Length: 104
Image (tube, rainbow, N blue to C red; front, side, top):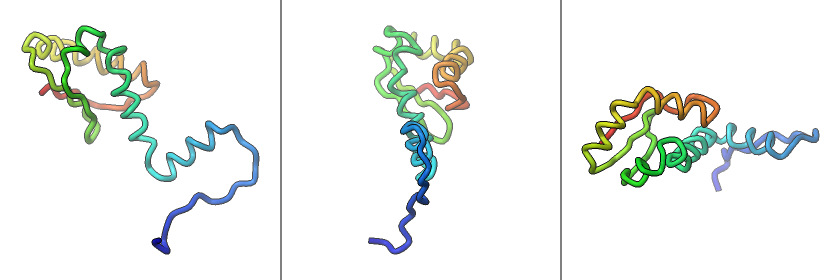
């Protein structure tokens, strides 16, 4: 095991488990990944079932949401509603997770 392994400093005060988990995720730089995963899991709720069924791949990389679809109609709709989708994502996630949407 690496001698320089990072560990959380001991805190003997009592706090809600949610706060402790949030601190741990932030300490290990995992908070962004968890939020990105939550966004991907919420895609059908954000975009709607019809659009979600037509997207074959969705992932977040470097602050951009990448959406892959074979349907030219869905590509056009996603392009047309890009600003609205970004607003819905921010509202649903409670904060800005992505800055742009890339349609593949």
